[in-house]
Length: 83
Image (cartoon, helix red, strand yellow):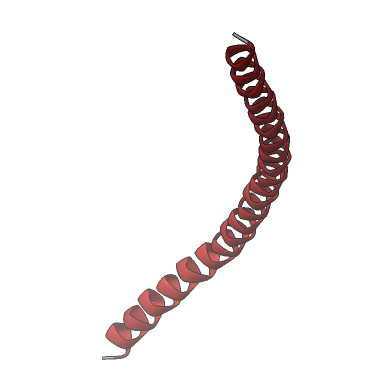
């Protein structure tokens, strides 16, 4: 009978140790998750900034492309008139 109680006591101790170990691991995982979430937000912000810079550069290029096309069209009209 005493050995059964000792066995049960040992199992309870192992269960308590496992529960504490899992709490510690859970705490560490929550910390890692918080860090990764913050890093993810930072990467999203950097990506948004890069996207905005690219869009601004494209907006600057579009009027230049239109004027180049107009110049080419005007040059071909001038050449036709000269002939």
